[in-house]
Amino acid sequence: MKQELEKQILAAVQALFNVDVHVELSRPEEQFGDYASNVAMQLSKQLGKNPREIADQLKPKLEELDLVSGVEVAGPGFLNLKLTDAALVQAAQIEPAKSLAGKVVVAEYSDPNPFKVLHAGHLYTSVVGDSIANLLELAGAEVHRVNFGGDVGMHVAKTMWAIIKQFGGEDPQQLNDIPADQHAEWMAAAYIEGTNAFEDDESAKAEIVVLNKRVYQLHNENDHDSPFAQIYWTCRQWAYDYFDAFYDRIGTKFEKYYPESQTAPLGLETVRAHIGEVYQESDGAIVFDGEKHGLHTRVFINSEGLPTYEAKDVGLVILKKRDYNFDRSVVITGNEQLQYMSVVLKSIEQFEPELAANTTHLTHGLVKLQGGVKMSSRKGNILRAVDVLDEATEAVKALGQSEDDQIVLGAVKYSFLRQRMGGDIVYDPKESVSLEGNSGPYLQYAHARARSVLARAAESSHADGAQLRSDAHVPQARSASVLPDHPSSHDATAALNGVEFENGERSLIRKIGEYTEVVNKAVNELMPHHICTYLYELAQTFNRFYENNRVVGDEREKIRLALVQRYAETLRSGLSLLGITAPDKM
Image (cartoon, rainbow, N blue to C red; front, top):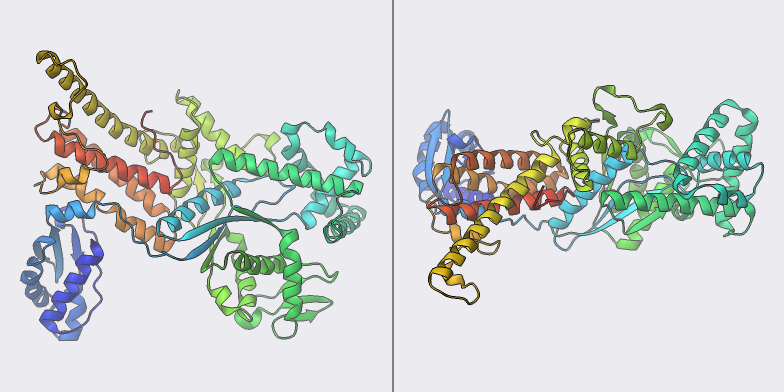
């Protein structure tokens, strides 16, 4: 609708003034119209005329447009346009632009490291990554969700060192003594122990460095049989099982998991192939000189010949391209990775410029609890992913609500997604589960409320039909001809065609009509928070409508039920993009 109207306004400008101009409509406050344009002010310089004069010339031309019922000139030359009721119904169709039709997109997010615990940042990245992938799919892209993590590297060596120390040697049989429900926490504790030893004990540090080489070696030799390898492979699988269980809990699925052990060889090969032209030797290591590109220099292969994170990421980018031949790759990480990824992509740009150009890196801040709330000491000094979910569950309990996982997930996901991606994410457990504020459960309840209105109308029509059959002594099955024609999802639009809306009805259909524009904006910017803002405003608009307009039993029942139906469909569609369920009952 918006794009069509912009084209029509451009045609009117060209017909009147024979000039080109960029026409972009905005949404004013409702009392000023449905769309606003500053095209007259844009034309002022080109035509050498006062913008108000230009607007006055455009006004009658725009009033001739089929989509427009009225035009007002405001201020120095703004044009406020009011749509026809038919145009509002047309705009209310859920038809986002298929701007990415035929494109292949790889969405990489979450990226946890085996042998370490999932923290709140992994939860956030998983939630926002899933929503962005949903947006890309809605825009017509073939989306592949992938994950990446470090199954080799110093963090693995530190964990292995602590395990071997605890076992008194390389004894994989002792792994059988670790309860299954404690695997993840046990490995996380070992990682902390190994990290402290690496920082405080020089002899332990030297031993960990040796173990780091052994981890790479067992991959190179495909060793699954030595005691050391048995400990490693068992613990790695425990980590993957832990990841899978968590992703299943939050409703996120990945098509492929890229371990660093798989990307490291390709990264090494690629970096070494471009020594001299892209990468340089420096003190026995291989580096990329980022200074000459306004960045900083980073090591890609260390002095011991092992790949750093940088080389592994080079391998990952190339491997994703080989696997999917993507048109675009979207990578979501924390803000601390911004400069790091800039260097990696700049180095790739030197030998594969298109590959670097087609990779989009999005970042986010830290997840923090509102007011600096302290977690219990047993949970360590990080905010774990499970801690956030547990806090939400406790907040639901405190309100006396049912411990419904979908409500908890709706609360957490919406609380994350409604904040613009980029800065730190402040999470307030109590606010997130409220049924009265800007929250996921509030919107879930809003959907359930709309569905209850539709269900009540259906029950009323059934009762009326039963009474009619009784009076007419008709024992056969219900006949549709004796029932009111309540709209379904298929005929709600038909019920609204040709309708002249009353004020409250018009406000609601107008707001519903903004959905497609908001979705298109969220797709273009890869920013799900636009969906959240809109859905909250939509629910508030519906509440005002419902408070002031009787639905069931009113002479305009058919029209208003069609509006409720379309509202519920829009709310469900938006929540789905956020990865949040829309229950019919709460």
